[in-house]
Image 1: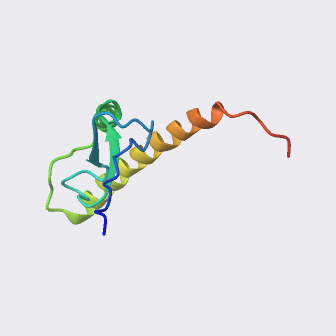
Image 2: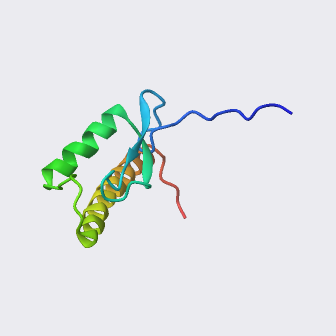
Length: 97
């Protein structure tokens, strides 16, 4: 039996395989199990956006606050993914339906 091949992580936004790590898209202190692979560039962008909306990444014992903060962070992550997809599809030719 051959050993399973380990797949290389690709950035969920741009598809890069350079310096890609699992990012805690729900914030490590709020929803630690939800991760997305981001390259270094998009990881920095994600944290700049979190900072720009004033999202507090520090742990709070208030569960409801943690869920709200995680929801905001996930919304930003989703927006980044959708923007990456929009850029990719803008390169495709329009088809007549």
